[in-house]
Image (cartoon, rainbow, N blue to C red; front, top):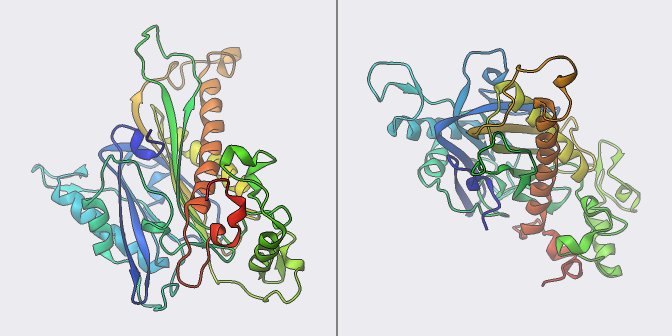
Length: 376
């Protein structure tokens, strides 16, 4: 079963990365050639973005044609140039001129900090990364772990990565038509957080909340927990992350900059303002999974997309008074979708951690705590 963004009709995903010889970075493109309604919410104190202002609900452009997520810090924003070039070759974009090729692709972008993690600071994504990621974008299930923008991701000393998740939203049908398609919400997250996804005492992710078996996990043994506490003993400008800061001999400064970025998407027909709200609430999922999140050295940014293939009644603005937020209202539908959006983004973040494999100087959670995994 496809449990990623590409389960939604109209969305393709592609990656391009380089590993070795001083490289450990990459780019991921969420490609929507027919256009999708979009919103964004930026919560981190150190974001790196492009074309996000146009996603404000009051601004003119209603749809985007791709979202570019990349490593490389501010240098990595250049990857969006390659996405635009490939879109233009395909005639994908906002029609400006009379000829079919006279288009302007709308490609909002966000980046993570991974400079130097492969060994050479100057090695970062370029426009060619974005071009290749778009050219190879497909409807195949999206890989998790060390791929695309997650290639150089690191979180609190452990290898981060790219994660995926999908949820079915339990909604009343939009009409009497029994063939109406289900409503889904999916997420793709690139986890490069300053905070830790792991409880240093239990050795398990914060998100599992005593239900580790449902995630294929169990409490790691004592030696694994000791190793994990040593890795997590990172101080951020004098601030201990969780209780790990109490470990003796902890370094005073961690890796300089971080960020978690991603996309939440649904097939439900949303307005631009509703997409913005979905992006906002998706950050709740990040706050559940990473402790802490949204710091000054994070650039946490979430995009939300609506393919619009599933109409959900009532249409926006059609209800007033007591019907505004009651049973069967648009608000009731949105609340269910928003809850699902937060859940699915949290699940995608956890998937990124569990799927990551050690790279270079950065061990994975599986490397440090192999006994936490029920299946070796």
